Image (cartoon, rainbow, N blue to C red):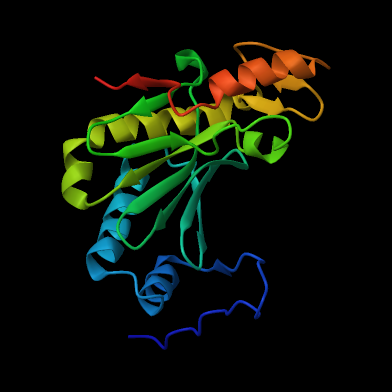
Length: 206
């Protein structure tokens, strides 16, 4: 076995992302952070599945606590193991579902941020995306088809329909999307932001 390369370290107090070279480095980084072994193994299994069901033009990049899937230089989604589950962040909302968040049995799903009003415009951040939290490999196996379909759609949007993402900017009073486009109208933007970025704006996955 070759000599292990020393993992890069984050400067104290720094929030700059640390990129790693490969999966082995990510696994060691997760183990060093105390992530449970079953979640580390699930992370590897999940990555292998992603590489199998998505086309081979994806690019995988590794950080100190996650891996990120890109296509056409756009981020499709990010996967990060946490203390009790694996989280998929930044999954692009499906414009064909009017940007609703999918509900899947036994899996927590939610829009990245719940909109709180014009006095908190940052709550419209990441309006184009949502997250899934998967507790374990068993639940993933039961819901694999639904999860893979959702991630496949996020890949497709990242590659072919980047201009159809839901982009909401309350400060400017603008919404850009395939559903509605608003320019310089704060009141109307507010109305749609409350609707599109609420915890109840969902659909059931059959």
